[in-house]
Length: 408
Image (cartoon, rainbow, N blue to C red; front, side, top):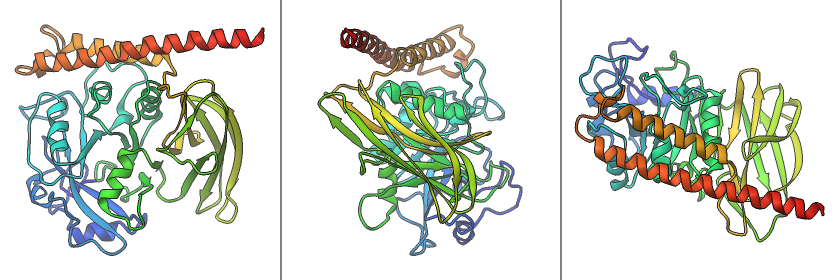
């Protein structure tokens, strides 16, 4: 979230730290990351936030509420009048020791800048992605997410404002290629029509008995999260083999069934459908009602014949309302290679980026200096997806042979 002026908030003063802590009470938030704008955004007086990015919880924090300043980086290519623009997307930087305004033609130098401070970074606004490959620029498209995830720079994906299932589609595709980004939801106040802080939020499992901001950040990077699009109204508890929760892994020497338990908790009576997703496909579901005194509970046994992943989600007519991070099942130490098609999708995605930013391309004007270096990263990422596609095809062929042999 931001505390500034603009993006729908037209007051004359920024929110004070004390007002931010008070605002955390509406959705009973334990942690808020206040994002100082270190790009060309429409939040005015952004420079007042930069000194507060210091690696420490703000003194206005209380025993139950952590208020901490970090940063969002972006140079929107559309919808702004600023001279400097970049197409890579908006980055959320968590765990910084200092903040300053930095321009880059691509996202990679910003990831490196954050990493040197011991911070993690990921792409925001995943909900703005279309179902296919993006063809038209807007303010916020995370165009470089396939590249920087493949090359190990991006630690998480974030949906915000209204959320959408295209964000989840992108998450599934990356999981099917063997990557393990964290899954995050956030409010993006005040760019959310001024809805309360935490209308979209992230539950994070932290290691250790005491919640700290650093442990919260580490939990996000590890994928130990559950996201909600309606505050603290509901929560999904996913356990595999009784104890294994999102962000964690089960190692098997051979294919064998795993036991999945899902509990849907709610602070009020809700009716809906809870689904178990395996490698991007719904493999079990249950419709029903949950109440504060009686959560909906269901069990499923899943037999995986290749390395894969499991998630739980609660759906309604608007899409996912609550969604867990992934539990990973690794069989015989093999990486997840669940979809040839998803790897090929990212190859086409990067091919389109490459063509668009090359000399004469429709987005070439955004790279007057660093084009060769950026194209080099695109080639590296494409090669990774090509290797994944080949391995996924081989895995698929071996499984078909094994199944046919089993039938005989």
